[in-house]
Image (cartoon, rainbow, N blue to C red; front, side, top):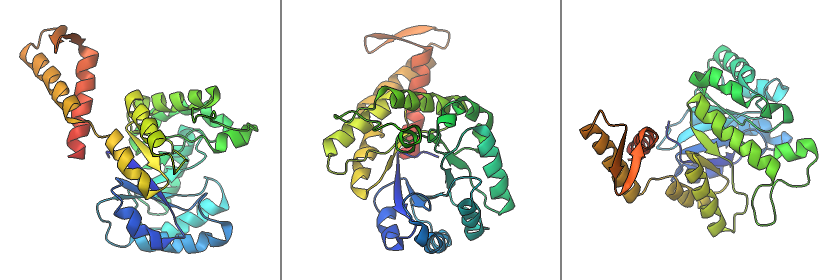
Length: 283
């Protein structure tokens, strides 16, 4: 499942569903959790269930449910019974045990969908990141967040004045990135909250792609184009990757080769193959 951009839309705003689906996002996250007030939860569940029963369209449809083990989660499952979104986003996840428990509950409700955990929203979750490799076959990816965690530990902020993450949240970001790759699943960058800062968004998304994230979440349709651009390999990168793969194909016994004036070896070949696979999925 190649997901460059994942756009949140509140579940109680069905008037926004069509616009989100036509935004160019690879996935739309129909939100039943933080974007929906308690008084609107039932209306959101009905609207999301109705949307899942309609023609899906190009964008994949994910549903962010409420935290596992809560009455709100159980109500979400009752509303989604028998329906199968492309993935279920699980907030406040704390490791493989939560994925197994969620998968079991989804199966009981007849919901056939992989799970996309938000893996850094509680202090305990940080220590469970390495366990996701045990349940990689049940995951649609792995993402992280920098909003709930500072609130949970009493921090005043997770970002510096210039938008950079403070050291604790850089650590959480890095560990989530490595956890996703250890599990063999998509590594999804967190949201960029400043809707007015287009240059900052593009720089943030470009950095995420550089660092090894494969996609990013968005909170407004206007953010989708920049995110897609950042996570789409450009023509020069694709051409370079093809030359590396071709060079090793022509010299299968070589450990290292010179391509475009630089030495490349097995890690460069693996990187080139991943880039070409990603470009092929997008095309």
